Length: 133
Image 1 (cartoon, rainbow, N blue to C red):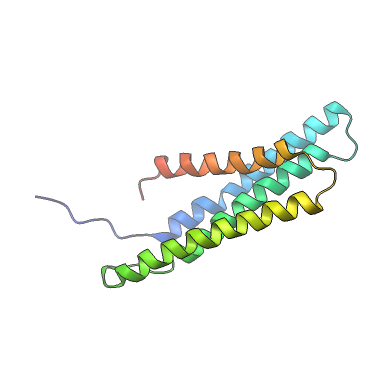
Image 2: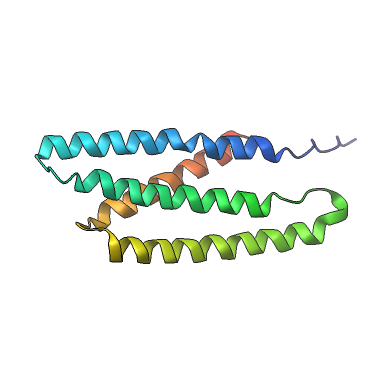
């Protein structure tokens, strides 16, 4: 005999994404410490880590808002449609965001930008596997 599925709770997913702001703060603190240790008065690494991580965080929040706006068996087609729509918006935002970062952020450290973005993406994977929802 099978058990019925637990009710879907998009609020817990949103709270997990909101907790990522602490990771961004930690990355910026590490970047500032690195810049102070290296004697970089422009705080290049910390600004670039911040730009990459905020881009990843904002795109994930927008993805969650779009894809989690519908729930229930009766709306299954709309849920699938919203999921695809959320992916497209997230990738478009990510591409435009990277383009703006590379055009406007001076001095640029591309490795730090990508590191901030990738660290946030890896943390989403960890959150996904730790929380069964």
